[in-house]
Amino acid sequence: MAGRRACAEEPERDLFLMSDILAELSNVLEARKNADPDSSYVAKLHHKGLNKILEKVGEEATETIIAAKDAERSGDNSDVVYETADLWFHSLVALSELGASADDVLNELARRFGLSGIDEKASRSTSGDNA
Image (cartoon, rainbow, N blue to C red; front, side, top):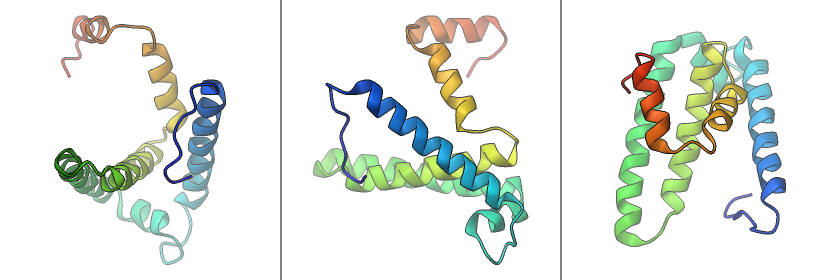
């Protein structure tokens, strides 16, 4: 799938493909959540707990930022795509640790779809969220 671009003629197929990949990954993460930590990287992260998982999310976020700055300069996006995949992966592990999944994020994105960013942010600030 590396390097695959969304096809303008098949946007629904691409959405389903993305959703299927995230659903399958969520299933794998859940299956490995309680596995032997010596048998799985995901199990090892879960065994070490949320703080370790969040440390990895932070590391991957930093690496993604650096890769994006490098991509801006070089015009080569391959490293930023790779690091973003790591960031998404570790974020999904964090969600799994907390009992949430990619579906929860997709549902939130669907809720926001069609809202302007300004309107969406305004709705958060009136409900007490200032992020």
